[in-house]
Length: 482
Image 1 (cartoon, rainbow, N blue to C red):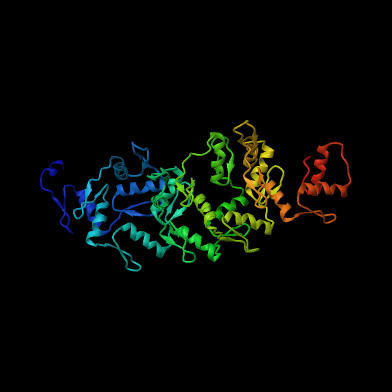
Image 2: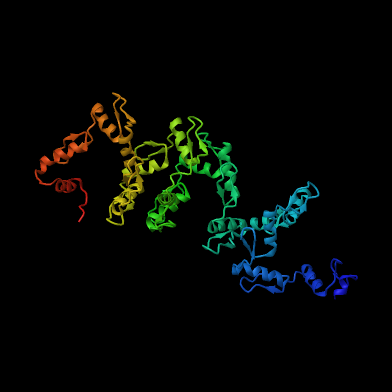
């Protein structure tokens, strides 16, 4: 048999006259003409021409990836895939197009050459449409079958496209191979990188037909248009509440399920939003901010670390308030502010304290309340080191050191260190008295004045201030701690 490699090939195919040095290779080749596939997968029933093809296919079911890249430790189920991958590191592109000279790292050259020849050898058996790549045909055929044959081995999610599955699997591996050349931010999908780069270029190719606003991707435009139409196609399966974005309903449903999928690697504390985890982790690392602020306002030059923060800021210059309350018509610059406002009408308090059962309309209020039980004081004064459980309280405290009074009365020019003090002062000019006595109906412009007045009706006296404070909670409707 070995001598035949040096002599004339003796085995000829009767179909195409191709010659082979071994009889087994001839038989394997002839199956391509006859369509005979004697090797069958016991898991899914798929058939193959050769036993080696069956072995490679079985790895799909087992999830085995025995071939490992020596550069980045990435693993593959087939040696050919490993070789193709390694060329990413070496930069080798051994396959060249004879028409345009373009180089390729794998056998995708054949697919590319069809662009020049116009050849489309793959035809849909349902509608007759032709394609120049077999993968494009398979993707198209799922329109007819509505099949999703690709399943994630980690979480079970299914996809109708192998590329989508591969992009999804990067979430589990934490792999982000695409990075922005401007700011270094990394992405697990090339499309996400391309959309991100438009932010740096200022490119906004998609425009709203209602208000002319530009968006840097089609998905953002569709979500924006729902503000005008009022469309909320996504609803909570627990309470029926509707949302205009899928991720919003997923985030909302965690309130009902109690799911907290984001875990702190330092202390194990769990959160239901990734943003909350990031903010919490800064307590351990001491990190306040990376300092990187690639997004800047064209009006005043102020810089931001996130594009969403820039968008919210720009509305201060334009005066745009695209979010409207359906109950009273009040307008807001941010959707989050509208949601918080709407709870005033509905009385909804979806955030519950696990320690005492107290309910809150905003998650931020619950977080602040939780620190009463935990004793956590993550905010420290840079002047004296005193700790606080709220950022706002820290800022108010620091003004004692700096003497800063940033809140000015538009009527008389008087300055204050706290916004609450300014609001109380302004009531002197407006005559507003929002605090009403439930016993006699008398009105007051300060809550403290109302409390003092209510003691007239109660008449009860105390020899300790702490006892008085505890008693006053009865009038305010607060729960007494036992």
